[in-house]
Length: 338
Ligand code: MRU
Image 1 (cartoon, helix red, strand yellow):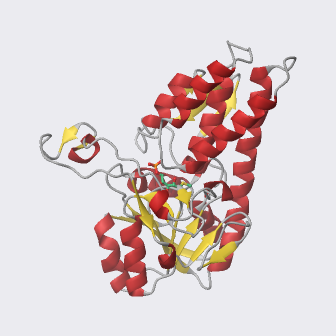
Image 2 (tube, rainbow, N blue to C red):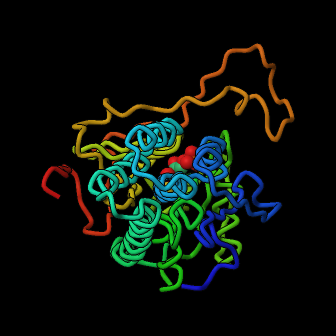
Image 3 (tube, helix red, strand yellow):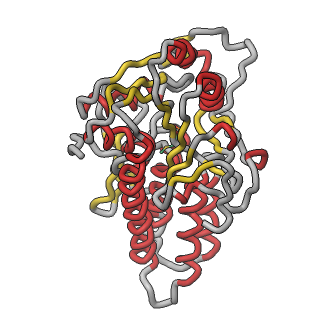
């Protein structure tokens, strides 16, 4: 795959550097942070976003908390850990990464350098997510049976996962293999991750794309313009029910109506083995300001009532297949022994 001229996140000189995703596509500015508090804020404000990337950033944040406080204090670790996991509730990768850091911390001996050893684990998490993304991009080629028009929702590319991305990683790889004709990009209201971020990534790679507002996909499918839909995931239950960006559920329902295959792509770290079904997934509700204003310009009255979930749950039976780095799974799903 071609190289990008930008990076989503890089750990260098004991500092985490990341592109400010709230400024894209107009400004490619980078933020450098070496405090766990600043990285927590970045996750809350969506300067860093996307399930796998949040996990990677949280791991580095936990390590960085010990940069200037290099002692094995359980009380301090607990404070840092709790701050990080309070940032966003839905993407399980955050909890997965924070728990791996916790396990590593608990096993440290008194002689070991806490900062350096936690940094090793953060790097392992990043490398493993990058490896998983490239496996997903390769495995995902198998769902293409012809040169296709593919539709995606939100952003599941490099900006969401580090290296290639998950769902968008498959699309980019399939394009390189001559299997994609064009990409339809859902704008993804309210924060426009599709319009702003997925288009940014596709544009950089010169992959042909067309943006549509979220309510237009049914019309496109009615005209037989979509062969395949692939989206990412923030949390997958053992039965395959999947939490992803708000609007994914309506897309899956439309696909089912028009008989368009609907795939989910995610690393196995997105599967939450502690929950049986989507009913147990906590959905993040964000400020109504994100609905009544765009870039500080009001588009609705502030005192009206707004519904503002950031994610929804797509029931497993609407998902044609779930692609992880290990396999392509088909309904009925049971991830208990995976
Ligand atoms: O609120 P966001 O932008 O963090 O939501 C991101 C998504 O919903 C993505 O589709 C998901 O995290 C998969 S990213 C590989």
